[in-house]
Length: 633
Image (cartoon, rainbow, N blue to C red; front, side):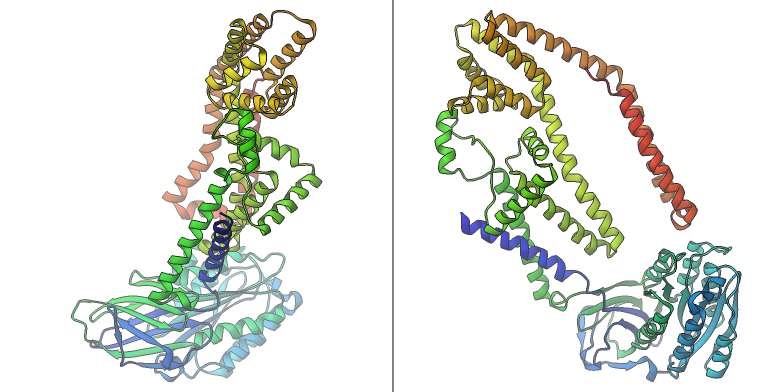
């Protein structure tokens, strides 16, 4: 059994490694920007690689799933394809701070001087309004003069600048469209909305590279959205001195483009093209005689994938599936070990006193020295924080056979796995943080729910248990015999707790102390009063059966009163639920019907403040209504 446990722990660790390894590498990516079949059977495709430039002999080409051996790969700088690049530069007044505009000018001049022969560059500046400083040209002197003449003043019209730059490609359809956007703050005066700016870039089939200077007023979300919507990249500069490096990275990516040429022999109207380099792969589609352009913006573009190269071939995929299955099996086995444990010799000996052949008393433990050490450390941590007794009480109320340290260790593992999954699937630190928070809140909520539900069942069974115990005493049973007889007749959780009381009494604990411990363990004041009545009777004498009948009748009336109060407050509870869910539901409906209308709340600073304030007020209102309808009996 110990070997199997160790194998399970190893499988869990291996599964986490699979998640980490199989996650996109982030540094390497490939995309097909254009597939030209207008001169079929002569075919041309343009690909861009974000990362290290591969050797030309490392490219692979598939056409409709068939590997082609004869094709030609040419770097973009050696082709006749004109590349259009618009430098969109923020010249608002805030760019005077820290010499940001001077640094931006120097980086832009370096960008111009290191251009390829077929690059055509334009400059668009935006302050209080957006304007074209110089249209597409290859004249370095003209471009440098235009850049040097930029003066920082006014507000920030970021979205107008993007829309103006994208419009330049309408008059030059032969240019490959690219935008390089630089800003140090959020948009303040644009007549164009964020969605309209993104739509203009998408319609122009432009790839947008964004650079943000991290100032106090900097908002990265618009730049990240532009880059994501058009298949570009977002670069962050912590200081204006980092702008040269950011512009250099953009230029390196733009120059890491290739033209793939081949002769097609397909016989179908549609053509699927897959181009791969070491560790990356992208697929696109076109039709015979057609031209498909745009990166991540057109229906004909399917996907660009990146990741660890081991998982890019068929064997790697099978290996990944196998490792994932092994990890799932290991995690499942660990969960099973938490609840269905192997009986120890001590449990077997104790079961003779408890009168049970199959149910163990106590808590479980999942194996492995490392996990045991982690559980001990977690238990010590809770002890120092003063939370050990509270967590232990909740675990006992929920009847989960897990020690306190094991529960905390398992909880931390769940939260970490949730954070990793969020990072893998959302590719965003914010998404990972949200997922981590959700995984952190769900286990305590589930534990409280299970404990509360079991406590309510215990309370509902209490009057019936007292009546059965009273009947047993009238039949001539002693109190101990009566408790044992009732424990075999009544359902769980009451039956389980009574059987535990019997086991503790047989091991030497006084019956009234075992009963009192059960009342404390379940957090039941009613059961505590019943135990108090039994203690008083044992001290002063009297008819215990009649006393238990009186206590049972009192508790039955209390339960009826609770149910009556629950019925009378049902309207208030459903009102609280509806009022709490209504704002969220309406926002979801508006987001689905008119996304641009509701998106302002997320894009604008005022909207974000309003969202935060409304959330806080909604939580306070829900809590207030909850306290109003809660009536203690």
